Amino acid sequence: MSVLAIVKIHGDSGKFRQALTERAEEFAKVAETSRSAGAIHHRFGIGDGYVLVVDEWESPEHFERFFSDPALQAFVASVGGAPVPPEVTFCEAVASSDQF
Image 1 (cartoon, one colour):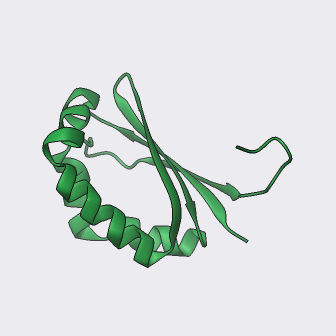
Image 2 (cartoon, rainbow, N blue to C red; image 1 turned 135 degrees about the horizontal axis):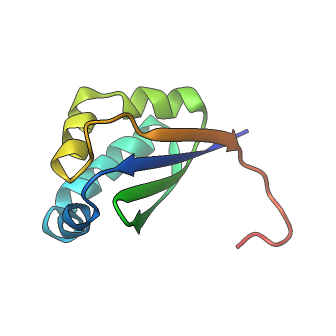
Protein backbone atom coordinates (compact mmCIF):
# COMPACT_ATOMS: atom_id res chain seq x y z
CA MET A 1 0.00 0.00 0.00
CA SER A 2 1.43 3.38 -1.01
CA VAL A 3 0.59 6.83 0.32
CA LEU A 4 0.07 10.25 -1.16
CA ALA A 5 2.18 12.95 0.46
CA ILE A 6 0.77 16.42 -0.12
CA VAL A 7 3.16 19.14 1.03
CA LYS A 8 2.46 22.87 1.05
CA ILE A 9 5.66 24.90 1.29
CA HIS A 10 5.21 28.62 1.87
CA GLY A 11 7.74 30.99 0.33
CA ASP A 12 8.74 32.91 -2.76
CA SER A 13 6.92 31.14 -5.60
CA GLY A 14 8.53 33.43 -8.21
CA LYS A 15 12.01 32.42 -7.05
CA PHE A 16 10.91 28.78 -7.14
CA ARG A 17 9.55 29.10 -10.69
CA GLN A 18 12.86 30.63 -11.82
CA ALA A 19 14.86 27.90 -10.07
CA LEU A 20 12.94 25.20 -11.97
CA THR A 21 14.66 26.43 -15.13
CA GLU A 22 17.97 27.76 -13.86
CA ARG A 23 18.67 24.84 -11.53
CA ALA A 24 17.02 22.04 -13.48
CA GLU A 25 20.02 19.72 -13.05
CA GLU A 26 19.79 20.03 -9.27
CA PHE A 27 16.07 19.22 -9.36
CA ALA A 28 16.88 16.15 -11.49
CA LYS A 29 19.42 14.98 -8.88
CA VAL A 30 16.85 15.40 -6.10
CA ALA A 31 14.40 13.35 -8.17
CA GLU A 32 16.95 10.53 -8.52
CA THR A 33 17.55 10.56 -4.78
CA SER A 34 13.84 10.54 -4.02
CA ARG A 35 13.18 7.56 -6.30
CA SER A 36 15.93 5.58 -4.63
CA ALA A 37 14.41 6.54 -1.24
CA GLY A 38 10.93 5.22 -2.09
CA ALA A 39 9.19 7.87 -4.20
CA ILE A 40 6.84 6.52 -6.87
CA HIS A 41 5.34 9.67 -8.44
CA HIS A 42 6.08 13.39 -8.09
CA ARG A 43 4.49 16.66 -9.24
CA PHE A 44 4.72 20.36 -8.32
CA GLY A 45 2.03 23.03 -8.34
CA ILE A 46 2.70 26.73 -7.82
CA GLY A 47 0.27 29.04 -6.03
CA ASP A 48 0.46 32.59 -4.75
CA GLY A 49 3.17 32.42 -2.09
CA TYR A 50 3.44 28.66 -1.91
CA VAL A 51 4.50 25.52 -3.75
CA LEU A 52 2.42 22.37 -3.55
CA VAL A 53 4.17 19.01 -3.81
CA VAL A 54 1.99 16.02 -4.66
CA ASP A 55 3.92 12.77 -4.34
CA GLU A 56 3.25 9.08 -4.05
CA TRP A 57 5.59 7.22 -1.70
CA GLU A 58 5.99 3.66 -0.47
CA SER A 59 5.19 4.86 3.08
CA PRO A 60 5.09 8.00 5.22
CA GLU A 61 8.34 6.87 6.83
CA HIS A 62 10.12 6.75 3.47
CA PHE A 63 8.98 10.31 2.70
CA GLU A 64 9.84 11.63 6.16
CA ARG A 65 13.33 10.12 6.03
CA PHE A 66 13.94 11.73 2.63
CA PHE A 67 12.38 15.10 3.45
CA SER A 68 14.18 15.52 6.77
CA ASP A 69 17.63 15.39 5.14
CA PRO A 70 19.44 18.64 6.03
CA ALA A 71 20.86 18.89 2.48
CA LEU A 72 17.34 18.72 1.03
CA GLN A 73 16.10 21.30 3.53
CA ALA A 74 18.93 23.63 2.48
CA PHE A 75 17.99 23.12 -1.17
CA VAL A 76 14.31 23.89 -0.46
CA ALA A 77 15.33 27.12 1.29
CA SER A 78 17.66 28.08 -1.55
CA VAL A 79 14.87 27.81 -4.14
CA GLY A 80 12.45 30.01 -2.20
CA GLY A 81 11.08 27.93 0.68
CA ALA A 82 10.23 29.99 3.75
CA PRO A 83 11.87 29.08 7.08
CA VAL A 84 8.57 27.77 8.49
CA PRO A 85 7.54 24.13 8.68
CA PRO A 86 5.58 22.97 5.62
CA GLU A 87 2.07 21.60 5.91
CA VAL A 88 2.25 17.84 5.24
CA THR A 89 -0.73 15.53 4.72
CA PHE A 90 -0.59 11.77 4.14
CA CYS A 91 -3.38 9.58 2.86
CA GLU A 92 -3.69 6.10 1.41
CA ALA A 93 -3.33 6.01 -2.37
CA VAL A 94 -6.21 4.06 -3.91
CA ALA A 95 -7.01 3.01 -7.48
CA SER A 96 -10.33 3.94 -9.07
CA SER A 97 -12.04 3.46 -12.42
CA ASP A 98 -11.79 7.19 -13.20
CA GLN A 99 -8.04 7.43 -12.53
CA PHE A 100 -5.82 8.88 -15.24
